[in-house]
Image (cartoon, rainbow, N blue to C red; front, side):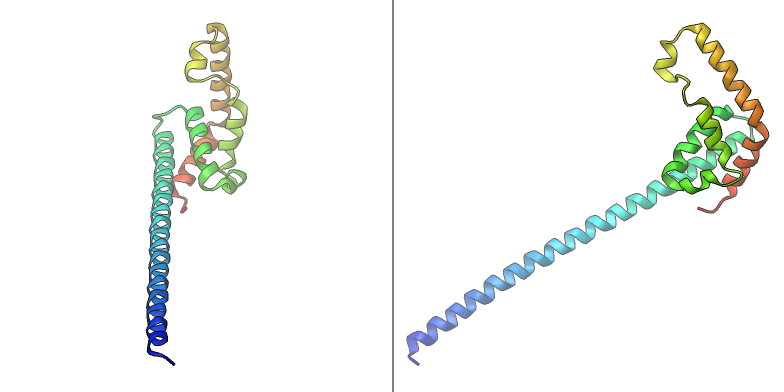
Length: 151
């Protein structure tokens, strides 16, 4: 084999090695970046979950101490449980949150409430208070149970 061919093959080998090392480094960097993104996403989900659990516990405590309207707390807890543990809404004593939600979800809130006729608002408030008084004991029991529940 001639010396020129040997040098050509050596240079071609070095170029091929350099290209392969570059490709491997880029791929490795991409994998590391992906792992960092996944770790951040996992951490975000864990923090979000912990925040939702804490919100449920605060709402449950507010129910137990009569610091919040039961209907509002049921709406909020049901919404949080939909994301956190929807299967709990089918279990006793937690199903009361879903039941109250179903009975009052049609009622206007926030801006819609402000834009609604006062007579209709009074009628809805009366209906809401009736639902709250009908389910008051079950709501308090469910609040205590959900506050102590291990998620």
